[in-house]
Amino acid sequence: MKLISWIELPNLGDHRGSLVVVEANKSLPFEIKRLYYIFDSKPDTPRGFHAHHKLTQVAFCIQGKFKMVMDDGNEKQEVILDEPNKGLVIPSMVWHEMHDFSEDCIILVLADDYYNESDYIRNYDDFIKTLG
Ligand code: TYD
Image (cartoon, rainbow, N blue to C red; front, top):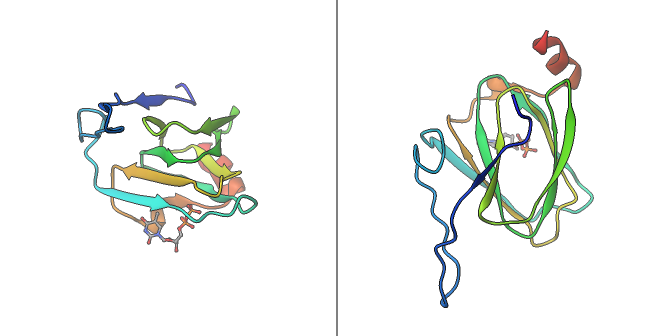
């Protein structure tokens, strides 16, 4: 499976400004059960550092920019998110880390399930062991 995949949404904007729409099961390959947003991040304080057993998410940087590190245990890649209409798919069993936030960075994350702490793998060695 490809480690980095994007969902590009059309910008329906006009002279009044930009407009981007997300529709469950249409723009995204899942029903959205939860969304959360991250802001006021500190440029030198990374976060994330976990994988999920089952959860699939899509992250949009709707303002500013940051760097996402994605690691499936075989391959590790860094990508910059800085386009509000371009979402990064975060599949299950991909270790991910968020770094280098711009001060104005706002990240919108859409998830296919409710919050469940037992779905998290927060230790890298456990992540590698779980991959088998
Ligand atoms: P955490 O997973 O540490 O954030 P990140 O992975 O972005 O670094 O989440 C911070 C806290 O918020 C933690 O106590 C769990 C809680 N939380 C929820 O209660 N519901 C949620 O949907 C999310 C994403 C986090």
